[in-house]
Length: 326
Image (cartoon, rainbow, N blue to C red):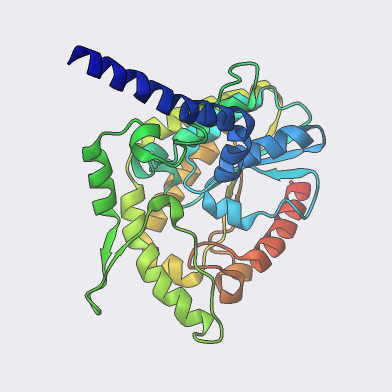
């Protein structure tokens, strides 16, 4: 019996060995490139490191900034904003990028929920991508394990319990009361929908989208204390001012219907927080949240609160001019 078991173990070992070698070779040869293509954050950091010498303006923020600021307008501006990115991960990137040599201006972009928002609480699966950024320094570890085979695996790659996984996806189930259908949407796959102008006027689309994105998201994204987020922001200011960088706090444009959906209470509360940051830290603030050049033109928006490419080109040109004036 023992002999049979030993034979089984030996055969299993020789059967699995080629598979292990194949995975190891794939990990070493194509792992880094596959990982780079799967992560927007890694791709952006890698691109920045290649052209860091010519960058003068660095942009940080969430998907609102990622959509609103087009760094194709000028070689001197680089948009490091990513979907869901909070102040904590803005800070992570500032630390990772080092002395920011050549950069003259750092732009921190904010929206209505930025001062009380934690990415780790809302998008736990996305946070690991920032840790993978460190693999871009090859001297640390030439073997990028978990970057290839397991990079999209939640249980193996994100160190979350099965309970957390089930709870997370249950929260993403939206029941359509009209049709009774259940739609499951993964958080890291929520890409703003394109406007189909042939089937629906953009005003109607924005109005429907605002009802879905304004109050519900606003309430959900206020998931941390104002004091805890401010503490992180102070660290970012210290890094930038220590390196003699100009700092701007920029509030991005939103559609009029989205602003109406947010409501006066949320907006007045946000204005007080913005004023607090501006006066306490002596910041230059540019607020475009209710700018008539954008607010009333739905053709500039991809959805209720994100600009489309046309809007991004227009906004980036205006922003660069305003930065010059300041």
